[in-house]
Length: 99
Image 1 (cartoon, rainbow, N blue to C red):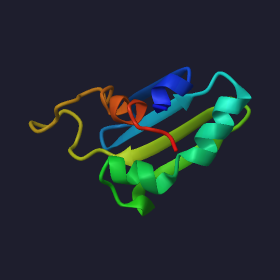
Image 2: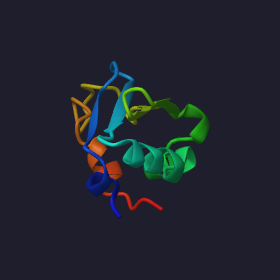
Image 3: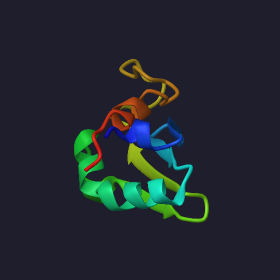
């Protein structure tokens, strides 16, 4: 099952010019449990090709949200930036098959 089919929303956005944040919103406690147990930090680091020690993970059970923050591959707004707002990062995680 794809992550996007299980959860309410996967959203990404800038967290400043050097970082991107990806939020996974779960609408049920069961979905939240499945995401927290089935989505390893190492897997997300591999998807975005960042070292695991640079990927920050926040599990927020009261809101049923899992949040990842990672360094942008290029500085926001630079000539090499292909996603100025960081909005396209969510698509890769949304399409990921959950174990």
